[in-house]
Length: 262
Image (tube, rainbow, N blue to C red; front, top):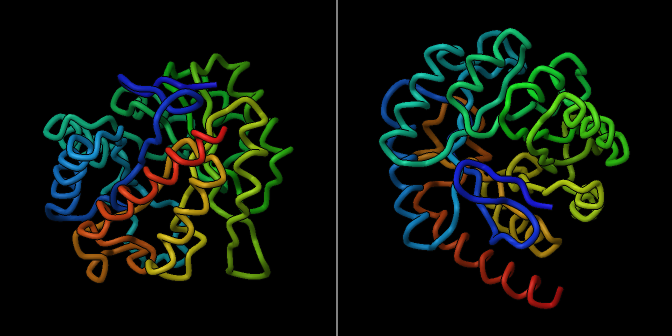
């Protein structure tokens, strides 16, 4: 149960991997600075890293909120960051008509949580020839995600991964249920654990990251930024880039200990 992403695998038998980057592509050099730092960290800590960033945040709660540079410009900026850093790329796709352009640039296509049941989108990304990471909707049970897996596999997806990002707990609050990690893995798909979106703020990210890895996650999803306070989206839930290395060292030790015990 492992999925090949670029030149490495995520899943059973593979080391813990990291999916990291800013929430959204911003004006300026934050994306490239982050990519360069992540590439150096990947070598220093011997960990496989996928660079993530959204080109278009299509689910912002306010029409006035920054949404990103748009698909075409965003993919071009991601492509440049990937070429300069050597990191594989992932980003989300919201519309069927955007899948072809995204698949030409991305190594891993991400389906947003709110679209995890969208059959036409799942069929399109499944047929695009790239592995697909579906973020489990905050409204969705793990049983429901079997349907997403089946739609993607029927469309020909070369690999399916799930991200556990939290479940509704009342209004406007998410709780990360670490039991969903083994439950999603039981569907035959590697699991990425999102350590940020269920956090009230960035100080809680390390606690969630430790818990997710201890529960058996195959990879961690952490949004990072050189200066979270200046970020244009979700800054309160992004880890400062200079705090990432210490956390990755810690969770690698946790992964080694828990996997050694089986």
